[in-house]
Image: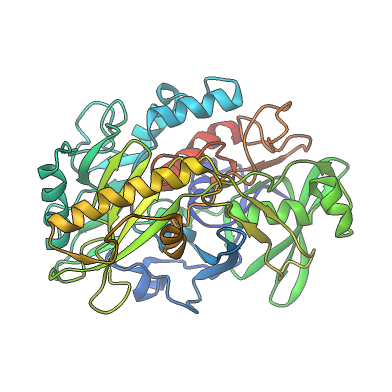
Length: 484
């Protein structure tokens, strides 16, 4: 019997494992379906440096899921697999959610628990901001290193200069108090180390900043290549989990279980274990432990990918060095090459009004769930993206870039270039017990089940207007105080 069993060694799992094991009398076991990397040297070269976006087909450090972007358009989303999770394969982007996001979050859960003023102490304590750590609202002694690119690529420089010429303001710090402006162009705060002798920067994900330093603790055990297939219960109290490890089935008994497997796997595990919509579980022959709207609401950031040609070479310190934000749109001039001699600009809707869902098609843990993104289902979302693409086109024209967007931007044009920002959230939505969409309460505890929590992006009850990595670290830091 262990005190806390954490399922998933990604961003949230790394933070929780490190924080909970600070108490030497509290035993913490972490199980991870992918490889367990015990030191920085164990990370593959592709995951070592910050300039890469290591999402190549067939990579062993990725989960891949088929999705329906719209009912007619298939797609795919990827997630990090192995120690560090998606924090080991993302773009190192570390921007705080906006105060208006936290205000909306608090309204959804009916308490002030998630107001910006309430979470700011956690945001400060988790960061070591190399540029603004001595300024109000920032931290200097936390485990997460935050830097902005001081020598951006030519492409990022031209993009930023063009945005300024078009009248957008300069934003030196997106994480500034009281949470950064809503509009402007500026460098992306990144979780990277200092440049080495070759000028390259190392990726410093949650595994590096939290989990690896904690591994020598005798009360912390981390196991890789261990797939959890279902949770165990005694009545309505969680009692552990059934796992497959080395081809053998085993049960880990625990006083408390925390799911940190991400918006896909945490939801799928709850459903396979009998926590979900009763009618859907019955159709699959899964006994119901607790009826809950798992997977009934999900959100993501739809992204239009504009391919263009520009004489600036591909490559940068990170895949995204600068961004333009205005209201609910983020425009991203990627530095990585998605095709030879072709650049890509992402035009992203950060607060969509459309929503999706996730459901099981089989109780078999090796069959991926069905994910319906529901992108662009509302006229408002399509209208906002058409206007945003028009602005992106103006930026490209000023940059003397060649792109294929001449003329009016139609819905069909959008659908042809529709993709995902890979930010699926909300499948185990946070909310009040009387909220028909809520799976967990404001402290991440599953409604109707004792001893079971979900701490990852699946609980976020609103579309975030910034990328999610900083918010997931915050979630785990905030949950630690409730789980101790």
